[in-house]
Length: 325
Ligand SMILES: *Cc1c(COP(=O)(O)O)cnc(C)c1O
Image 1 (cartoon, rainbow, N blue to C red):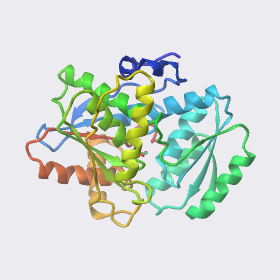
Image 2 (cartoon, rainbow, N blue to C red):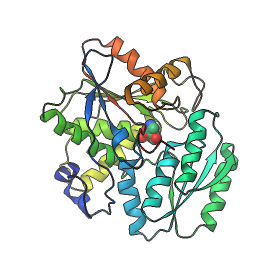
Image 3 (tube, helix red, strand yellow):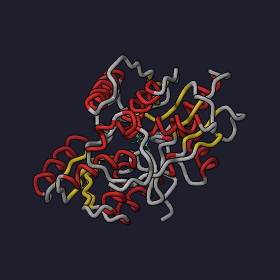
Image 4 (spheres, protein in one colour):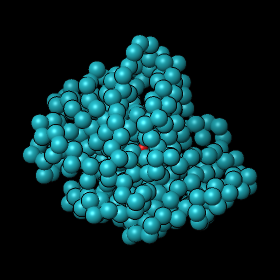
């Protein structure tokens, strides 16, 4: 594999170098977040790829690597009509030479949703509208049966191997701390869907010996993501790391879910999320959205108020690249 960057995780779990990997991400900068007097920083994972950035790219390196290694021809996934996972997979899957089919369930219609659908098509994905959750699951099964050499990626794209991406990303932050770019963060705030990001960052922070607590801001239903699914993820991810040579011994990832900002549910706006979307636009120069980053930024504002002495790192999960259509 040709690495676009040196992966810090290979230093601590060298066995991972045997896994297939598609190098498409670049290290991302950390900057002071405007409006917080210099003690809140932002990890610019929106810039993790010039093609389409944001939260899924680091995972694709492991998942698309595996798909290519298995000789897959079609990437199949399921997401909401405004799913950034679907847009990101459309961009990076097609760039890797694979067909992409996405089965979409309905979510509240917003400008961001319409923009996402246009981008999915622009990137060359085949889109199938599934309607509600049950009919979408049925349509996905049908599409899987008729697809050529399919590789399936579940909503959230998390799993013990995909989660390694965020363990590695946290070790990348460790290097930035060592280089004096920011103090050790007391707390990290990020949007929490399936929880892979939250869990990976918390494991990475524990590996670094930090006391940092990772706060996952819940943006989806409790049935899909809750403290128990997060614990299970942490354990299965640690098992992969140990199998790859990470020295056994106790690690206590510190993580917490914040349930206060979900409103009516996945994709439904709240006044706080609208305000968060405006913060996004002002900070990053592109329109924000209310499903993930709007709610996470609403939580960031509250948490920064509640902990006025702390250094806080906001983990930006929404792409700011690839969106000018
Ligand atoms: C997928 C995604 C998340 C959530 O990440 P999880 O690891 O599933 O919790 C957050 N923000 C954006 C923009 C995403 O695409």
